[in-house]
Image (cartoon, rainbow, N blue to C red; front, side, top):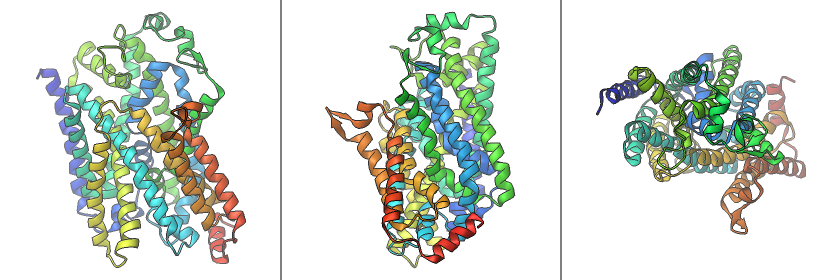
Amino acid sequence: MSTTMLWILAAFVAYLLMMIVIGAIYMKSTTSSEDYFLGGRGLSGWVAALSAQASDMSGWLLMGLPGAVYALGTGQAWIAIGLFLGTVFNWMCISGRLRRYTIVANNSLTLPAYFENRFRDKKRILLFVSSVVIVVFFLVYTASALAAGGKLFNSVFGLDYHVALAVGAGVILIYTFMGGFMAVCVTDFIQGTLMLVGLLAVPIIAWVTLSGQDVHAILDQSGVAGGASAYLSLFSNGGEPYRAIDIISQLAWGLGYCGMPHILTRFMAVRDEKELKKSRAIAIVWVALSLAAACVIGILGRVYLFPTVLGTEGTVSTESVFIEMITKIFTVDFSLPFIGGLFLCGILAAIMSTADSQLLVTASSVAEDLYHNFVDRDADSKKILRVSRLTVIAVAVLAFLIAWNPNSSIMGLVSNAWAGLGSAFGPIVLLSLYWRRTNLAGAIAGIASGGLAVMIWDYIPLVGGQTLGAATGLYSLVVGFALSTLMIVIFSLATKEPDQEILKEFDQVAGK
C-alpha cells in the first residue's frame, strides 16, 4: 500500500475509533428504554438540529444527488428544492406541536406509540400496522446506507465490495448497539459538521483550481446531453425538456419529511421549546448550504475531473463524483492525503448518520411497540433494552443481505423507502396535529393505504410488464401521500367523532 493510501487509511481508522468510543461512553448512561430511544428528552438545540439533518440526508446527499446532477444536469436540483421546502415546513409546522403532543399523549417514546395514544387505540391495531411499515421500509433504507458504505470503501481502498460492506456495517452496529439514542445523536452531530465542511470546502477548492478555464467549453467536451446550456438549465433533464410530471415528482420528495420516524424522533427528544427554536434556525441553514453545495459538486465535478468521464466504460459510477474529486484534490493537486482522508470520512459520516438512526428506530418499533405490547407486556425497561440491542443486530444483518448486490442504486433504494415512509406516516402525522376530527379509523386507513400504494406503484408490473411508476414517470410518493390523505378524511368523516377526552387533549396541544 502506498504512503498516500496509508495516510487516508489512518484518517478512516481515527474517525471510526472515535465513533466507537462515543458509543462506549454513552453505554454507561443508557440504563432504560427511554434513554435508549429518546435520550431522556435531553437534546440540546445544536445536537438536535445537526443530528436530525445528518440522519436525514445519508450517503444520498454526497453520492446520489451529486451523481444525478453530474450525469443529467442542473435539472436534478428540483429534488433539492423540494427537500429544502420540506425541511422548512417540517421544522416550522411539525416539530414544536409534535414534541408537545407526544408528551401529553402519555409520554410516547416512539411514533407508533404516539399514534396509539393519540387515538386511544385499545386494540393496538395502529401500533402493529405502523411498526410493520417501519420495519419493512427501514430495512430497505438501511440497506441503501450500507450499500453506499460498501461503494465508498471499494472506491477508495479497492476493497472487495462485500468486504467493504461488512466493515461499514460492523462499525455502525457497534456504536448503535452500545450507546443508543444519545450515542447516535452525538455521533450524528459530529458527522453533520464534517459533512458540511466537506460539502463547502471541496467545490470551493475545485473552483479556485479551475480559475480561468472555460467551464462551458469543458462541459461540451465532456459530452453532456444537449450541450452546456441545457446541462445548466433547471428545465432540462439529460438534454430533454423537463415535463411537468418530472418536476412535480422531484418536488414531491419534500412531502416525505412529514413521515420520517428517524427525523421526527429528534423533535420529540429536544430538551425544551427554547432549544427547539434554536434547532429550527440551525437545521434550515445547514440543509440550504448542504443541498446547494451537493448540486454544485455535481456540476463542477464534470469539469474538474475531465477528461475522465464517470459512468463510461472503465470508470466508476457517477455516484462516486465527490469521492473522485476529493482524491484528485488532496492526492494529485495537493499532497495532503490525511486531510483528504478526513473529507472522505465526511461521506462515511453521511452514510453512518442515517444507518444508525434507522437501526435505532427499527429497534424501538420491534422492542417497544411489538415485543413489549404483543409478546411480553410485563417486560421491564432493562429487558426491553436487551431486546432492542438484539433487534439492532438482526436488522443490520437483514439490511446487509439486501445491500449485497454491488450494482444496487443508492438513489433507487432511498427513493423507494422515502416514498413508503412518507406516504404511510406523513398525512397522519400532519392531520393528527392539525385536524381535530381525525379519528382512529381514519388513521388506520391512512397508514395502510399509503404504504400499500407505494408497494403496488413501485414493485408490481401492471402495465405491459412495467410498474405504474415506470410507465407514468410519476413518483410513488405523490400517489401514496394523496391517497393516504384522502382515506384519512373519508374514513374519519364516515365514522364516529373522537370522544371528548381526545378533543380536549387536542385543544390543549393546539393552545385553544
